[in-house]
Length: 231
Image 1 (cartoon, rainbow, N blue to C red):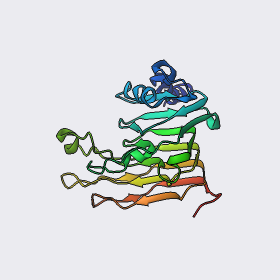
Image 2 (image 1 turned 180 degrees about the horizontal axis):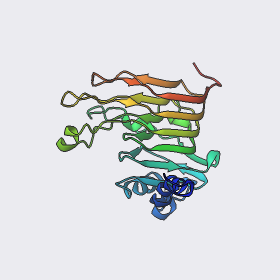
Image 3 (image 1 turned 90 degrees about the vertical axis):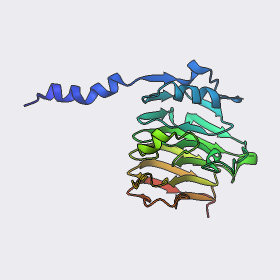
Image 4 (image 1 turned 135 degrees about the vertical axis):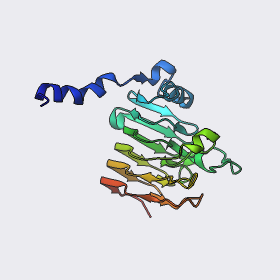
């Protein structure tokens, strides 16, 4: 029988061994003036096997999508004091496999990760054009090997303590194509304590543009409020 002390240690050990990086190390200034997109993306890409990316309090100017493609990666801010802000409306690549992906401020194309303790603020030219958070496949960079392994799963992510304002779709969720007859779903993602305001649409469970056999289902929403100036 496992002792209580050992049982507690087994629960704490994953937290102790999680690799973490701070976006400041990669050049993020979070002053609301400089473009911090590349710095944040470099911090994310430095953890190919997942880990924790820390976003200290401040205003991060984001000009294009911040993309999470690897599993087990968490972006964590310091609550409302960490603001991912944009007034930039990027040009949509209509010829790509996933047109419109660049419209999201944060795009999760992976599983078992998440976004925590952040504000996503869209304003100016980007207001009502860009999406806040997108959970769905990013097929621009999928290799043949990745296709064979059902790369486009977007499952079991957790999104906590978020404030999203000024978006076309505050949260957009979409499954990908069926690959080799297998499912490609967007399942079992959980949202805790999310406030959405001043956006055209709160949550969009989008039908797959690839007409795969799976759908957006079994996702869970706890304490999610959609208010102020919404359709």
